[in-house]
Image (cartoon, rainbow, N blue to C red; front, side, top):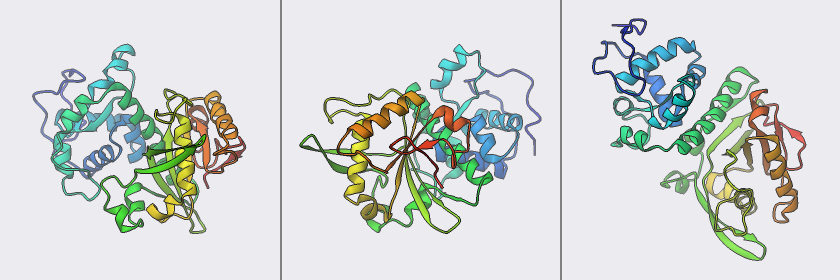
Length: 315
């Protein structure tokens, strides 16, 4: 059994696997690393260190070995900022084909028979950035629930178990379509949250949330609902709530929509949109925050504002 403290001295190219990998024995931590990467789609090395509560240097050493052995992959779409920043950014990892075979048969693992090497190779830079923004939120939430108040985090797979049978058997259970009325016209639009979770608070109540990660690239509103916009998302969630789709689809009594955006200025624009759109004016459905506020605070208790801009919390 070899430990990753034994690493070949020759400097490897960062995005090309070595033809010779030192022999090593897989550990339970290696399996957990692969499981976390599969669950999140892409993770930075810093994310993995936080999730496994392990020193970043040791995690990076292990990730390097797992990459060169084919259990993990380094998507080349991250190459742009590694070249621009001289390699200072943490590496991003996706699941490799050997990692997928390692997890085969796991109830929480996705479709088998997928060529993960090809999927990672075809990943665009923008898709990667969005996936990492979702991972930023999820990891911060997991750490806050682990280290903060007596709150239990329910991930999507566990949350789905309490949904009606029809939803559990659906090919895409966390997506749905809803009829939206806006300016006298009715339009059917699709809803696909970036992430779904629930919190079990100390008094035993379950609080479900859906999450939208806004990277500032989508227009706040457009002239028509035929194109994506922040307004269309707000209208779709508000219509879903008023039509009780959260109850019929997921057996939720209530839920909230968390919007994480890029800046206070953009959050202010969203607050104004809610206040000035008659179909959603005064809605208590939406809670907003931005990147700087969440970095500086506990994601559970600080940094969120309701639709009227007043400070609020998740618990």
